[in-house]
Length: 352
Image (cartoon, rainbow, N blue to C red; front, side, top):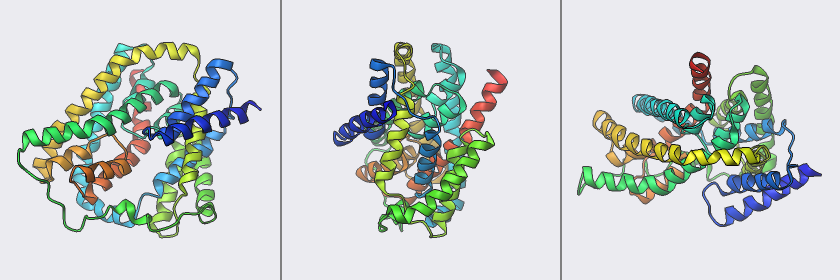
């Protein structure tokens, strides 16, 4: 009964925030609803095994975004991608250590707090490897809000100050985002079920392997391979919402009063994290534009910690319509989800 009530409350609050157009509203609302029920009744509950379902769904969703065009663009983008990933990893480690020094959170939690991953994916992976998912979820939400709400305006202002009067040129052959290639398809549950069955099986094996983020990584890789082969119809958006509600229940039901009181420590780390992203986007973006002859505005947007789909929409509003931007953002998300948890585990093992 309490599990049904937890899911119901999480779904209602998630739907309300989604309708209010809050960024990541379904997930954030689900976390708030489940957390409120947990704080009020201390009986919010969801089976821990549902994490495998949520992570497999999330991995399958990201995998469905990977297309042949993305793969074809990769050889030209290897050097910029390595610079992006190296810069974000260095920033992640520095900010994680800073958060660790300023709070009483454990090192693994602090590293996940600063990770430039997805707001729904990162807390799930953090929970999977033993970090405090509630703290990570709050910091990831702050990062997402900053990345989508404030950072684009800062990038636009910086571009105008560094290169006044320069207008971005639309790259030839990049009028449409490669990630939109699935937009013409009409995903259905019946068409997606075979793909999801394979993704769930891969995710279960990934979980049994004991690898950090093994569930999501395995589901992502398998789904991406199926999508590239042209045999994936795409995931229905409502199923993605289901995954967000389940993720929100997993995270929110574990939030207790003691954790809420500890979140007061996160104000200064959140400010430092936002400042770190400003420096990284402007500084490394400028270096990238000079090294690889990419538009400055596009280079800075590539380093933004928002999602691949969101960045495509934001970039279009800023006058940048480039397939390379979306490909780099998508590869950045996949790289963070697959590689960073292993690096975090290694750092904690060595220095923790």
